[in-house]
Image (cartoon, rainbow over all chains, first blue to last red; front, side, top):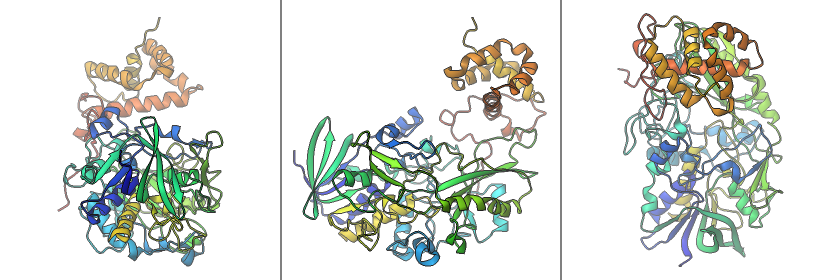
Length: 478
Length: 126
């Protein structure tokens, strides 16, 4: 078996897939590419039959002693594009300069302008629905698809916040596109019954059929080998055999837990390797309304608010993104069935050294996440929450506000994102990879995905990590 | 022996909590059969089977259980029963008209019957 390749890609989630997609446009017809995926390939029918996209029970793959903080990912071809909800806001320009502007967190080594063209390209590939009306993220191109319909509650919020409330940017199609139908607001996006949201499988699967690409599924990458300042081999296990494959370039796009763990397991150490584990944290607040029904939207979530995002408050408390939703819950009062709205406030966090990924002491072959508690920065956001809610409540006919007793209504307090553990930066002491996501020391190793994010932002990370992957491939191969 | 059937309990909850709705008995029974098969799981089934057996005095039982240590679990199931019934019926497709007779369409299962969100609209504003 020939075990030498021009490019080895570890993972098949959006980060790896967008990188491979762009790499294939640059590489010659003679290039040999190996893609290594831990999970199996499951098609849409499998997802529907199982009503689930966590193909391999991910909690068996890492150790987490904190029952109040979960981490979620899907181990299968397509990675977490199988289970995501398709929410795709861009980060805002100031999100890249948190330290410079507000004295907290960390700056990115790139600016919004560096990534903007790639945001546009990623949006085109995913056929993102949205509108620039009310969205402060500067754009060079229009959205590929028209926006989803607002609910009647969204319309009322929009009237009060015309410049900071917009239709949710989303990969859930508004119009049928390529092989995906329009979203019909069924509300189980983690395993979409009609395949309306973008996934790697329905949107990019052609990359695995390219004659230059060999895809090995059910192949576990155990560690890397290094020789001097280069990755010289990728040691993996397949069909109960361990062997080494060699690549001129290795692109590691697993996730924010396994990206750093693979490097740690390979013997690397760095003050920020595995450190800075973080993600957004959300709170859902329900408003009971009088005479206004939350109906009429065309997807499960139709509104996004930027009114609490950027500003001087970030010196003391986090930015928050407001999301409205239109599920199928009912208010069980005669004639008032939909007179309520759930507001989701998604707060950014700041990475810190005391939250990290390491090899588990119980089983060094798998990682452990350490996340002792929510940060003081986040808690400041939660304390400010009533003031944020009041601003929305003031523009709606509210009769009662229901606050949760703690963070998030989601079990385990997770948005299913994993950020920050192989962060990018210009200083090799303060960061693991450079502004092109290439390891500072091992120059044939590129880290893909949200593990490279130096800051969190309230924005869901998938659009940003996909854009970064397109950019990383252009920088390496163009 | 109590058996394994909770459908009488499910029917009693709807009759009691949604007493202002007109629902044919056959539709109610069909819904209850589907619901208790799909949604009431083995871990707590014996209690619901017991409530089913005494469903002829459901209003009294309802008051007592709501004051008991099982009240949260009970209330969550009663809410799920009502929500699922209303969404499984044609109620919202006829503008939630409580003067109509309501018919059970089929199990409100997003994978069995996708695109059945009665609150969504898909047309474009002119």
